[in-house]
Image (tube, rainbow, N blue to C red; front, side, top):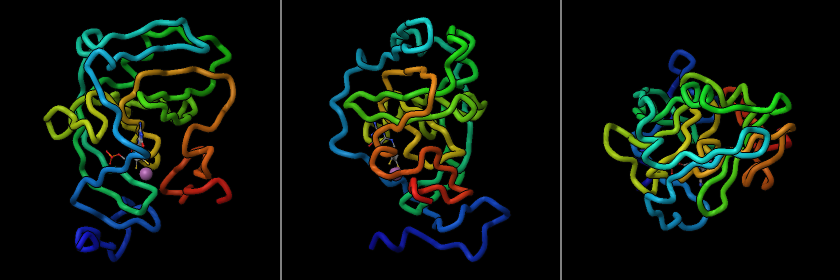
Length: 198
Ligand SMILES: Nc1nc2c(c(=O)[nH]1)N[C@H]1C(S)=C(S)[C@@H](COP(=O)(O)O)O[C@H]1N2
Ligand SMILES: [Mo]
């Protein structure tokens, strides 16, 4: 029974559990449609839009400084998972390599297969955000976004796009895939920002 793996905590555990969330020790897979067939050559990240266009190949990405961080994640489908450990490139280490136009205020994250999600630059450029390629010190499994996914732990987990291949800098907020389908434009779990009519 799946239900046994989700525990509603008695309180917010010193502010760690957002409203309406249960805790799980499992790692559910949530993907809209099939996971893309993924070759390592696809694991390149194209930077475009309001930034100097460039492409990071998989070897270039692997050569960037790697950071390991542990934090909690929160899915809009009401599960949270404590103390998940990820390794990857900090967004704050990537940004100095990019040259943004001054009009850039937001970024659209693109994934192999067409998934997209939007973030403001304030939500994107945070020291805990990673372009992650490892989970629990093992290569990230394909179903969880391997070889490369974004992890933005302070927002609901749909913002953490799996199989990323593009960062498009834009001058106004615009909805990505789930945001066009009713999810909140920002998605802060501690403000219960699940749907756009919240
Ligand atoms: N490319 C892509 N990224 C995605 C999704 C998706 O369908 N496609 N689902 C999102 C949603 S809704 C969630 S909750 C998390 C789930 O990540 P997991 O499968 O590793 O738990 O991935 C997010 N990133
Ligand atoms: Mo989700």
